Length: 88
Image 1 (cartoon, rainbow, N blue to C red):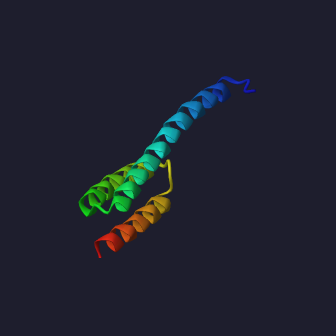
Image 2 (tube, rainbow, N blue to C red):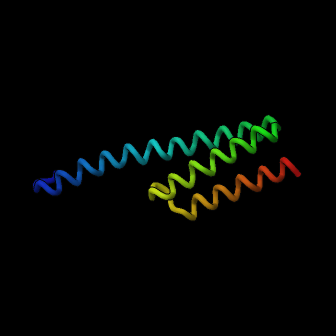
Image 3 (cartoon, rainbow, N blue to C red):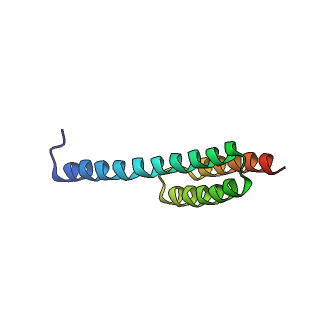
């Protein structure tokens, strides 16, 4: 257990940051799942729209440091490949 004031403050900050990061990661999962659902339905227009939303969300979350920028790029690349396969 933390004893000093600064250590107690750090525990509070970490708890707050953890809840924020968990919410952001959950939001990413939700957006990716909706993209996958649009892909499986075969709707090209809806899939393209969901892809755009997913890219925006991934960029925003990566800019805050919740996930690494390379992970965001990897996820975007894989989604783009799936979208191009559906279109092509």
